Length: 353
Figure 1 (spheres, rainbow, N blue to C red):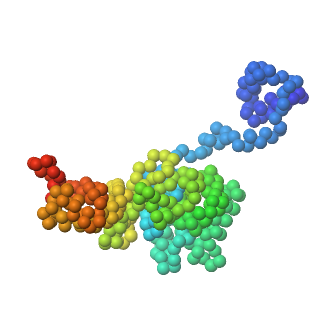
Figure 2: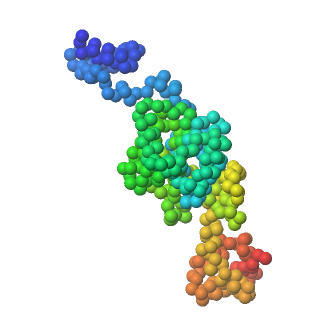
Figure 3: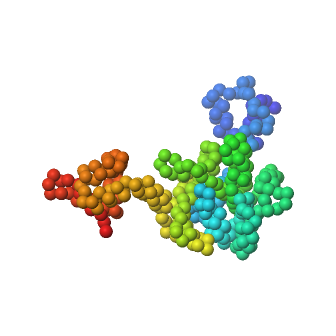
């Protein structure tokens, strides 16, 4: 058999006979013939990475596990500040809904103590999802669970309808050490290729960015390797209840922000969207502005209600005019009204009673 015949037979084996004419035409155009062809080695290594149409047909089309939060077959990370209601939302609201939708839900919690685990076990049983508590079992830990998952993955096991929720990511790997985290993310990706859905719950850093927004805890690989990175932004109320909204940061799909209401008994309901981030930012800004607000209020109550008099009053208390004018403008219509005097259009401020 000639080199040419061997090459075309090899291509036919990989691509099918339909490729033969196309290959012959290509050889003719580029001047390849029996005497100068360089055959590919039998068992071309590239062939193993190609996905056939038949294989592609078996892949699932994108579908929501939980709308605007979890896409089936993706690996997602949902982060919040400590005590930001991650566990409450996922155990009380998300897991039961996933079970009702027909998924096999495995919630792995390595961030809970014995005092809370008893009620969690009952809730899982009542709502049909599997709750794994590695640290509650003698001589076991989250590390053992991950190794078991790795073994199952390497054995070729499929996970066509499984959603794994891992609480929390820092119990799975050291998110600050790039090499450690990368290995876990590689495992997660391999599991999704076998049908699994991975949801890791993580934390935000103590400090926010320059715009006052939260920052996830971990290296840049966390954001780049996961399909979705979603923040949970909590607002705590005086009675102990909470409003928590999502803030999608990186997504592969169309995600709208959603809001959860958590009552004093830790019951969770999905509600109309509230921009909690904006409310929290406004509250923090008002706390920061409170000394200047008090000075402005003092000036107006003393009868010095023109902008010039207000600025002069605040200046005597070491508050600059830029700060004063910013606060005057920020709370116009909320704390005071603005009117223009007939003479010289001087700005006058009056408190809203």
